[in-house]
Amino acid sequence: MTAIVFDTYAYVKRLKAVGFTEEQAEVQAQTIAELIDERLATKHDLERLEMHLTIKMGAFLAAAVTIGAALVKLL
Image (cartoon, rainbow, N blue to C red; front, side, top):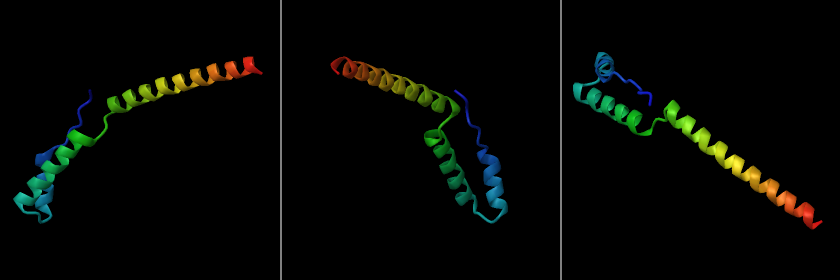
């Protein structure tokens, strides 16, 4: 899995440089780091989703062909 690097120290320094307090900057940096870790999809996540959707699409196509063939036989 590919790691996403977020430099919290550099981010805190940038926030402090524009007027954030140490506490505000640290809380915001930690919150963003948690969001990245927990909720941001990685390339690996997207590849797995693509594979899952491809398999589902293949199953739907196979079902449609089977139903179409059954209907042709009935007619």
